[in-house]
Image 1 (cartoon, rainbow, N blue to C red):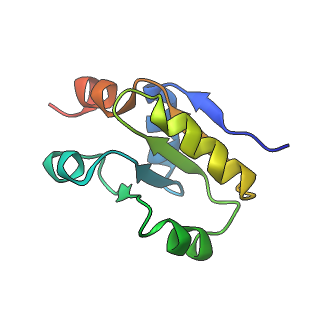
Image 2: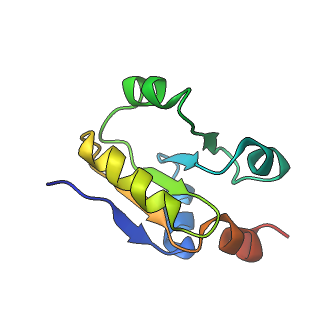
Length: 102
């Protein structure tokens, strides 16, 4: 069975910097609007079907939430849908913001 991989914020940044990953924010809309990782898509029940339909399954997916807990369930969901490189970012946006967003 395909599964997701938990990665650190630093590992996520390395993958993002390579330029071919899709970044998914699974927090609420207000949090996303206040601040998010550049290029991240807010993912919710309204657009998840379109995202799956329009994203090649070999695209690296980086999923983050507030602290890295909720993103694990979303990561497993995408892995079960056949995506090959699914990453849940440990520490979530809160740690990302501490390290990379002044």
